[in-house]
Length: 119
Picture 1: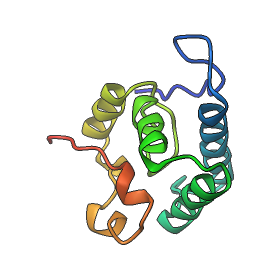
Picture 2: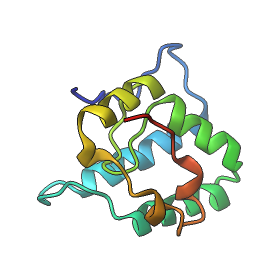
Picture 3: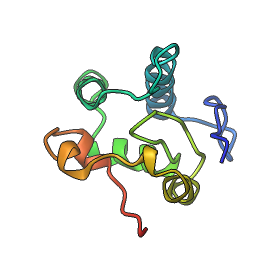
């Protein structure tokens, strides 16, 4: 499945400031992996970015994880798949995109953004 890389558009045509900032930060994380073989964003880097969003923007964790899940953002490579269902489908088709749950649970912010899938 090809990820939806259009970070400036959603179905409603309107993004809140919080949503725009979150999508921009994830896009920056994704772009920071260019040139690396794995294209994987380290969990520590992702968690630090989520912490900054939470503290600097005063975005509640519920709002942040809702946006991340609603836009289907993969925690492994920070691609936006467009919806939670599209992300689930991508994770089922490419097990390399799966985040190790035990690793993610070590990080305060990242662990709250996990989604459940059945393989």
